[in-house]
Image (spheres, rainbow, N blue to C red):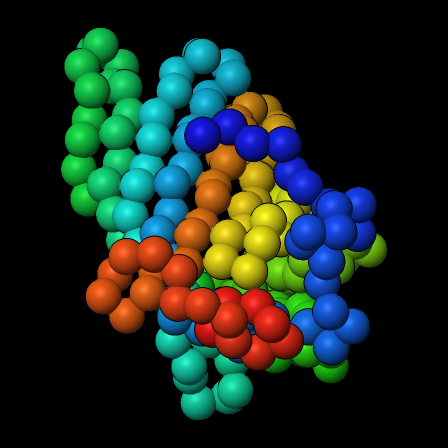
Length: 180
């Protein structure tokens, strides 16, 4: 599942329209597959699950992710169990970007697929988290977190694929010719 982040401007098959509406693109349910690599110990794990982007009261989106984590334990066993997280995405002055916040309102980072703003970072004392988003098609996108600091040296790579109403496969064209 490892991927190389793709750039929409360099790949005409993934061209992003001028008036890209990130909120409309994200709305709905997506499968997520994530690889996790702790470079300091060479531990590797995975997360598989579902992300739901639901409308909220401020014109933004609620982000809810839940699934199953597989991760080696210090004792040499393997942890397998449920994992989940929540964020809130707020609209910005431009429709192709949203500000992602923690549930308590603290800022996290800006999400966008546009070349000049597809990367952002978050300082989580004492480590730096750098994210890169890539639009891979009308029903697929990816992001990678590259984490460096005195406590962490990790690479987390995620691929999300749109789920249809029955929970399988893409839903077809939607706003701006992209999936709905």
